[in-house]
Image 1 (cartoon, rainbow, N blue to C red):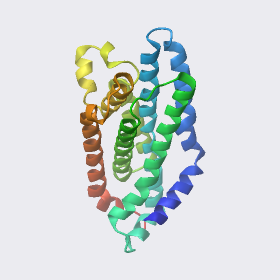
Image 2: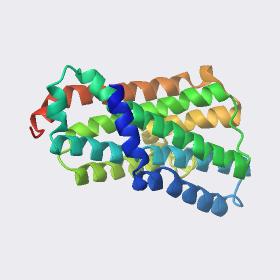
Image 3: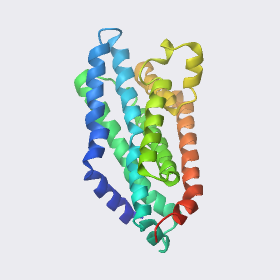
Length: 245
């Protein structure tokens, strides 16, 4: 399992496209939108909306890299070869999953660190921030695994990721405060994990909340992630069947 982890980490570090989606583009968006909206409202609320909001949105783009990795393994026959070894399915998925969790956590750390250094973002309870960030990494990577074993092509996975990331950002309140939306839209927002992630960050940063204040947000994110992980495991036999030998 750990050999898979090391191999995946090495491959992802060398992927320049991943660095662009994970760090460069989010920072560009943060700088641009803080500059646009900082004069239109309470500065702290604007920064707290934009930095965690775009951090959450771009965290979902890790699913593209996961889809590409799994599809390539399937097309190259790597999945079939691994299946012929004593390595269990659980250990195979863990080996593929752990590197992407690490990448998302690094992404959150870098973007929030950028917010602290440039915009004086106050994070509140660090333990609560860490737990919520892990919950975010958990759901996006579990959903990424589920999508990776279900889609037939890389392009299909990329298209679905765009829908989930951008649609969830729009309807989940990442682009604009949920409070400014019509009431029916506010109710719809609560059906998206993006809403619960951002609501949790706001509770911690703006209201000095702790883990006990965001426990429901954490529950939603972990449950949604667990569903994604269960789908990935249940779809694995079909994924293996379609793998080249």
